Length: 505
Image (cartoon, rainbow, N blue to C red):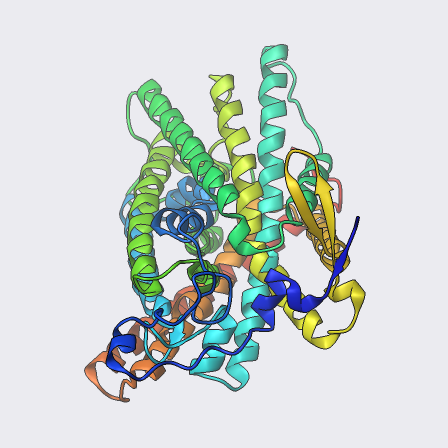
C-alpha cells in the first residue's frame, strides 16, 4: 500500500530541518571522545551516521575526480595551443597549486569553531553565513548556484558532442570518408536530458556515491584513450608540433585567419578553460558533509584533495600536452572529436561512450547541491504542503522501495528540461567552458575560502600572512576578469554565424 510520510520523517528533509545538536559534554573523557554519548545510528548533529561505504577517503576522492576530470579535459589541448609550450603547462600547474591550497583552507571551514567538534556547515552558503554573514551570503549563493546551473548546460553540450562523435565516426567508416556526416545536436541533447531526468530522482547527494565511482572510472578511460591517440598521432607525424608562444598570428583555422586581437582573446579564453578544468570547490563542502568521522572530516578531505589533484593534474598535463604535440596550432576544441581522430574508430567510440557515462554522473555530482537548496527552501516555505513534504513508498521489483516526492519529481524534471533547452540555444562548447571557469574561479575557489579562513583564524590586517593571502586574492581576481572578457568575446564571434536550434556538426 502507498503510504504518505510527513516531512519530519524524511532523511533528506531531516538534513534541511536539523534537530538540535546534543549539548557537548565538558568532562575530560568526553572531550577526547566527542562521539561517546551519541547513538550508534546518529552523528553529533542528529543526522543518520555517515557510513564507511559512502563517506571514506576513496568515495571522497571519486567525488572530487568526477567533479574535476570532466569535459574540461577535452579542451586542454586547445587551451595549451593558445598559450604555447612555456605558458600552457606552467599556467595549468599554477591553477592546480592554487586550487589545492584554497581547497585546504575551505575544508577547515566545514565546522565553525573547533575543527573536530564545532558546528557543521552542510553547504558552502552555510559556511559563508557562519564565518562572514551579511550580503556575502547572498552573493555566494547567487554565484554558486548560477555556476552549478551553467555546469549542467556545459555538460549537456559536451555529452551531445560525444554522442554525435560516435555516430559520425561510424558514418565516416561506412562511407570510406566520402560522406561528411553532418548532423544536428538537438536530438542528442534531448536524449541526454531524458537520462538526467531519471537520475535526478536520486534523493540525496550521499546516495550518488556509486554513480560517482563509475563516473571517475570513465574519466580515466577516456583520458587514457585521448592520451593514447595523441601519442599515436605524434608517432605518425614523426615529431612534436607546436611552439613556445602558442598559436601564430596568420594561422588559418576553421574559424578563419587568426589576427592579433583574436590571438589575445583566445589566450584569455584559454585561462577560463583551464580554470573550468579544476572547478570543484563549489561543491567541496557538500562532498565533505558525506565523510564519516573520526578522523576529523577536514583531515580526510585534505588527503583526498591532494590525491585527486595530483592524479588529475598528471592526466591533464599528459592529455593537454600530447594533444598539442599531435595537432599544434590546429589543436581541436574537443580532443576526441577533432580533426584526425577517425582511426581507430572503435577506440574513439569507447572513449566517447565513457565521456557520456562520466557526464551523466558528473551532472548529478554538481546538481545535487542545487536540488537540495531549492528543496530545503521549499520545505521551510511550505512545511504543511503534501506536495512539498509528503513522500510515498513505491515498491520496485528487484530493487526495493523508492520514496517518491512529487515536488522533487516535478521541480527536478523542469530543471533538466530548462538546461537542455538552453544547451540547444547556446551550443558553444569552448566558450561556455571558458565563461563558467571564469565566473566560478575567483569568487568560489579563491575569495570566499581566503576570507573565511582569515575570519576563522583571526588573521590580523597588515600581517605577513594577511599580505600573502591578499596578493593571491587580487592576482586571481584579475585572472578571472581577463578570462571572462576573452570568453565573452568568443561568444560574440560565434553568434555572428549562429542560428538558434540549427547547430550542425
